[in-house]
Amino acid sequence: MTATAHAVGRQPTVASATSAVVLDGLTKSFTRQRGWRAVLTRQTRELVRALSDVSCEVRSGEFFGLLGENGAGKTTLFKILATLVTPDAGSATVAGFDVRREPARVREILAPVIADERSLNWRLSARENMRLFASLHGLRGAEAARRIDELLALVNLVDAAERLVNGFSSGMKQRLLVARTLLARPRVLLLDEPTRSLDPISARAFRAFLRDEIALAQGCTVLLATHNAEEAFELCDRVGVLHRGHLVAVGTTSDLAREVGEDRFALWVRPADQRAIDALLARGVIRDAKPFATDEQGWSRIECDLRGGAEGAAETVAYLTHAGVSVSRCEPVKLSLADLLERVLARHGAGGGRA
Amino acid sequence: MHKVWALIRASWLAASSYRLGIIFSFGSLIVSVVPIFFITGALQSTMANVIRGQGGQYFAFLVLGLVTLNVVSSTIYALPGGLQGATSTGTLEALLATPTPVSALLVGLSGYEVLFALVRGGVMLVAAAILGARVEWAHLGASVPIVALVVLAHLPIAIITAAMVLAFRTRGPLPQLVLLASTFLGGVYYPTTVIPGWLESLSAFVPLTYGLHALRAVLLEGQGILTVWPEIAMLTAISVGTLVLSILAFRAALAYARRVGNLAQY
Image (cartoon, rainbow over all chains, first blue to last red; front, side, top):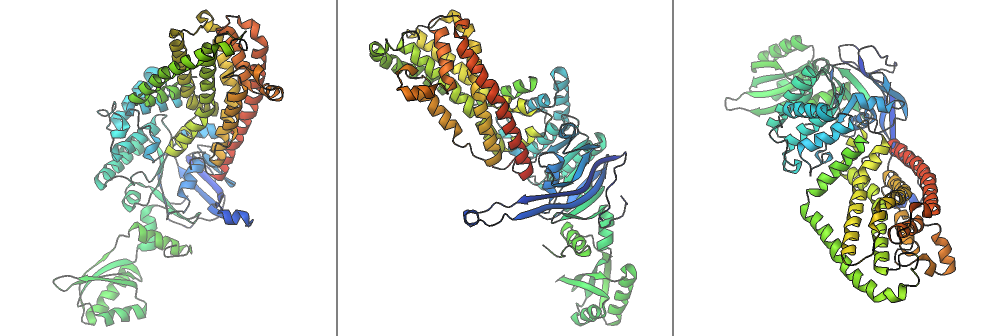
């Protein structure tokens, strides 16, 4: 894997000694459920391609983000890795063990954080939930008790350990789910939108917990599926972008942003002379200009792509100044996740725009 | 085994957190013995002849039949019920993602319900004994392997039903059919000898027939376990034969669910 963002080709992925997860040509389709009419009229079953020839390598200790729209294939990929769904073609290995041929070994190494709070037993206390899964992971007696205490402390649930889970907040349940998953000291952790039901402050605290405790202290390899830009940019060493089952790009978030968004700038101009802007658009110096509201001092913020990066910015400022338009500021814009995704998809010919 | 007990313990803790439910469960059991006592008392003279050799007392005969039927019903429904519950709550995914053998999950998910039915059965027998049911308590130990075989003989029905739940999200008609056959052909309310000829031959295909015959011989007649070896042999044969088939069916259902991706859908 290179450090820079790139489209994912069809070369087979080669596992190295430092590979935690290796996907090679992974493909999975599901049959769409038919209605009664379709069954009675014997219409053929419609296949939905969830993953298509996905190849990728995630290194040991890496925090890897999976981005993509709803239905892009993120959850299917996670379920395959967790041995809950079998792939149609291709292979997936976790620490060298094939998910299809050696599922028991994979389950000893990899643990999915089932983000659904209901997967906890709400009529049991936090400690009893932990005790059950400790037993299922083969931990017993004093060792299990010690590990449970350790993890409840780690997720800051010691004071609530004896309380029934049905009285927990969403944040507490999420932390308990993570603690439950860590019981077996997994080397690879799968997190599917772990902060989706958390308020912003709890989500931030949870992200800090993931970064500091799970990734840094425990040294876990983490695969994180998320729709949250902050999460992806803050936590992930690299991200992969899935689109309709295809892995269209892999790279660091900054590389991806640089590749698809380095030309995005915001200009503060006065007055907002539309003719000057149109002229720049016509000359191809700027693209995709989005004007924002004018402030009390009459400055208008215009966000656009500038051809040629900084040089293009200088040219634009000079042109506007010459046209009698004052420019008070011109600075690069950090892309939102939605913009980033949209641009990655457009760049890699995956339909562009929203699917 | 440790994993099985952990699952059973968790089920017990969850169930016992509904304290009123537990109290009502035992309360209703004890109360239900009273009408049975009076009804069977009224029918005693009519039934005395036909249940000779099976205790001779209709009250004890019927209570033991109902207790065993309840255990059979719990055995058949516990696993698919547990599986449906675990699927709808999302617990199943979490359980399957642990390195726990599927067989341990199956026994663990259904174990509590079966054990609870046995405890309820014990309470019902004691309540009946207080009201005058003649039970050979000294032979209680000999009844344990018979009860275990009754459970084992019906476990395959539970596993096949669970396979149906896993693959197609429905229990199918099998559990109702088996329970219906057990109720009317297994000798719960009356001995199989009073059933018309052609129906009586069908009762030979009902595992409960052998279980109840053996249990009544041991617990109501005070016979030794060796005297009921034909019934024990038949229950063992049914258990071994169908258990293997049911486990294969469950594995196939699990593989199917993993292939179509509906393992955690409900």
